[in-house]
Length: 224
Picture (tube, helix red, strand yellow):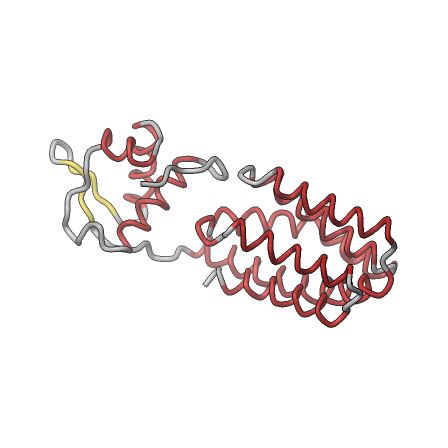
């Protein structure tokens, strides 16, 4: 049983892990969940974290705690709430805007980057990996990497657009990783970003733009 990673509040992760197991058919409607001690051992967290995760799912109509009897399954998936729907819509809008800015910036960077800027991209790519597991620090490192691509485009207007957009990008990306942490494959993500850098290094503008566009489209698709 995989243990939780410290990329989001542990109780929220515990709730997400239990939801995933419900969706996978581990427990049927009306079934009684194992006790807190068992679940805590499986998830690698404390009983209080499991208790809070169960409380969150009870509030969403998925589980029901019956005093003296245990915790029972009321639904196999949580209904979407309006807050989360609005957050997802905002994230998708941000990703669409990022595509408009960053795909063009990547294409220009492929034709205009300097050797110094290329070395900086490789360094910032490595820095992203160093923060994997700490969501805010990881997002900051990711933004720094993409900002370097925009800088390498040598287009002042694109740089101003990106810089003015950073606070909203940061908020949306943190939300995205907390809503769907299980969808992120660190190895695949690393390969995608390395592919963008490789295209810029090879001065292949079409590939740099295409890979950037595809990456951002995949992030939006994974929110569905």
